[in-house]
Amino acid sequence: MQVVRRGDDGPVVSEIRDKLARLGLLSGGPLQQAGYDDAVEQAVRAFQQARGLRVDGVVGPETYRALDEARWQLGDRSLSYAVNHPYVGDDVAALQQRLLEMGFDPGRCDGRFGPQTAAALREFQRNVGLLTDGILGPTTLGALQRLRRTVTGGSASERREEEQLLRGSSAPAGRRVVLDPGHGGDDLGACAHNLAEADVAYDLATRMEGRLGALGIDTLLTRGPDSAPDDEDRARFANDTGADLLVSLHTDAALSVHPSGVATYYYGATLRDRHVRSVVGERLATLIQRELVARTDLLDCRIHPKAWTLLRLTRMPAVRVDVGYVTSMGDARRLSDPEFRDTVAEAIVAAIQRLFLPADHDIPTGQFRMPALTG
Image (cartoon, rainbow, N blue to C red; front, side, top):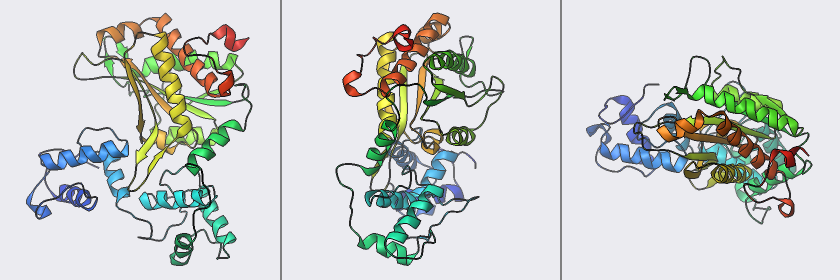
């Protein structure tokens, strides 16, 4: 779709205003009397902030998709698994959350009605004596609304994700990690100071690949040096491999030369009446951020929840690391240094190693070294 921003007008803007008004983010007179004005931009920014999207006040494809998904409430439509055009929306997320609370496993509460959600719905139907067709129609919805929550003691989705992490050994050997070097091919990403984001990301991925391999971790890359799959293809690749983790590698950029530092992102968003997040992704993001800040002099830009496509569609815990700004002279100088890239790679590998350790065997931030990791 076209990108819509302040100053635009027409049917698409009227549609955006209507959706924002239905969400309670925009008020005023008749919708057709105003275009994409300051009030709309502020409402879009508020929506983007809550949904874990890039906050720029511009409605591009990702923000438009999220606005469309947010309009659905549980019960507005029948839901079922459609292979080519899956149902996506807040109503699906509400269904997934309800199933989790009752002890069934629909997978991550990502608002996408996939095969795992269909299987969980069929299992629910079987348990309550309904036709096991995997369709959320009026009868199944009524049964869902009548029955009470059975899983207690915190978020069911977060507990299930933690349990899945702990199913394997506390040693890293035998785990599978997908590394995702951002951009690639003709898409160089952010470029400045003789650095291209795609090249930096791929170099970091190969440095990490060797270190992870030394730990006995099966490591796969989402792309080669000359390819550039889109985020949905990268997520599909990671899901098909059955990976335990995904780490996406990027650098950042800004119009000003002043922004600098490192930030790490994990899956998280605020939907209509609930907050969803990857608890293991948040823990890994925290470990990575701490290791990088302890081992380098990059400014700490902290961790943040986001619902970007790659973080959302991966079925395993996933994080994205933006290692420095190529538009910052200081960060660019550091990123040009092979020894600094080694330090970054070792920091992220150390964080991955720590994620799998029991709390009573963890090692303080900044003290993991490759000899200890491989010994």
